[in-house]
View 1 (tube, rainbow, N blue to C red):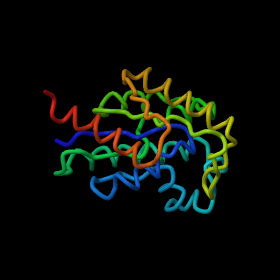
View 2 (tube, one colour):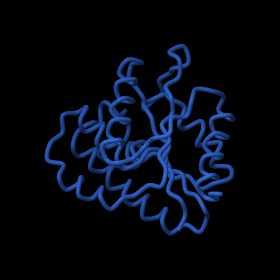
View 3 (tube, rainbow, N blue to C red):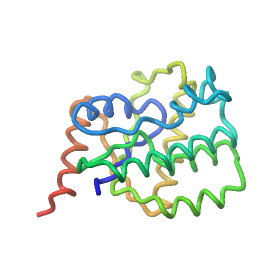
View 4 (cartoon, helix red, strand yellow):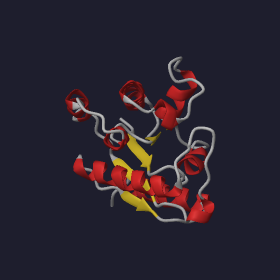
Length: 183
């Protein structure tokens, strides 16, 4: 079974840039929320703020479960995930969503081997795009919620310090290699 490795953090922390680089050598499961926004008829053409709510979060979680199951079947030694199942709890908390006990139970069956938390970029590098509409302050709050949620569910996120995309990817590969080949 391959190592299941989550790359997470608040909006605009550089996850996608690092994952695009990792994708050249490793399989990467794309960010579920962006895929739902692009493919799901209910949410197509909306940004994450417009689509927020229980139906949107449920669609994201369903895709995360699907990604996790597909990741387990890969033949490669490592599979990277652009965000993971537990990110959803941070966004649910932010959106004041209730009735999540089924998803908490489901989360007990999802076990990632490593979780990397991308350190926030300095404000001068923070940019929005067609799907990311949060302010820098909102993005930092989401980042803190994500860190808290992963710790709450028993993970010890490894912080990826601010650096170039290449150095951040190298940092992650080095840590993953240490886990794959312990001395």
